[in-house]
Image (cartoon, rainbow, N blue to C red; front, side):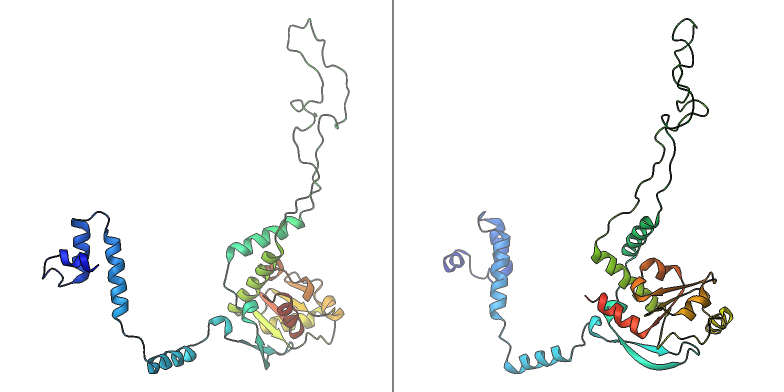
Length: 281
């Protein structure tokens, strides 16, 4: 490097980086501009003084004072009374379960997978070998002056079989378990973000009368609701069995399709803890 600088005339090194770049591009083919930039970067880095102990202490303090990421911020929700909808207590929720970002593509994949599994697959049609009818030849092979005719049960004739018709089969598809759990986390987070998730202390009904549950539903403004309970509730099941806008499910049966089908989701405290443990990442 010293011999290279001797070749350059005095005064040309007013700005070393510019001089090296110009000298590299004008005279020497092996000493490229990229090498000159590397030398300039090394020189600049070496000329910067090392940070003092006081500045390093300040940087460490600023890093400690920096806020944590959003995934470390706790989520809080009200625990309400099922009968009166009045807040009773606060509950801490796991952000990775109830604060996951929205992924419409994952919800779509899970819903399609669930609806595929719900298809009965019992459709069936008869082929030319299954329809009833004679097996005789429709017309003589020769002598008519017309085209040859065989079976009367071919698809092009009235009353014949169906070509390539549907047969009973399994329509279910496959989806990785991690994608299924991710879809359930996204559905719960979406309901929580839209203020459509109501957490209650206990789902208790004094009677099995439908009008009693309808009065609660009308009082709270739940036009369409999914009730998730941690255990079987006979009064709840009897009171909602003939209501078209109400679904009841156990905490083990909660899925994406049921959550998205209803506008409101009412879930008790035990079911929240079960889902957090099941969907923990």
